[in-house]
Image (cartoon, rainbow, N blue to C red; front, top):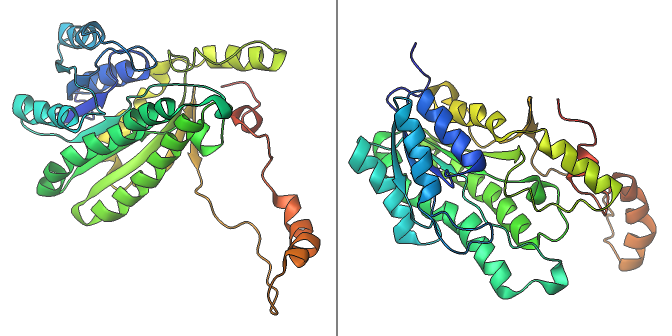
Length: 305
């Protein structure tokens, strides 16, 4: 039986472990040749190990699929370009880019260093730019292609101790929608996925209070393989008319996120003063205010299905 990705070539960053590995494995089972990118760094971006990427490749090949390991850092423009070049040189084309690579440098805002900030932005946001930019000339020439960017509810909703990661992940959404608009004329699409899954990236979530322990227990029931089917769909021709969207996967539940839109409006023809804002506008707007301490656990308080 033919897979939905027969004849396609997909590049997956951060594919040595966790969500990226499951994406690479499923894309291969669905018929794609896969470039498995992963420098094998620690969660914070340090070190390097060829093992994770090569293990994923070996598992794909052992199952009868096609794959190639790439160990470059997406934060390096030349390294990012090598991911796409490996796809074209080894498999003849590039059809989809999955920007999944990420690192964490979690720390509370007042202790966050410049290095904590730049290292996370460089991999999670600029890295996605680098790989996407490298694939763009090929997508334009063939008038097709799919960008799939991994955002996070840390960016869409917010999270404590992750100003760097949250900024990068919300920045990905902005980049994705601009790519979708700019590349529509060539039939190229760009979408985002916010995953819920237990992996190295979520294993650092604190579990000290009863509420935190419950959140971790929920996360541990959500396996990384649940994310892969949506990626395979978005990489395939089945999604040819789906672009500029933000999806989320929470175990067996797939969600569609809205983008920020006005929720209230108030006009004062004579113009506003600070006092009028305090006395008239804020009381009218307050019922629609977002919760000041909101994190994803408040938005998703129910057990994953």
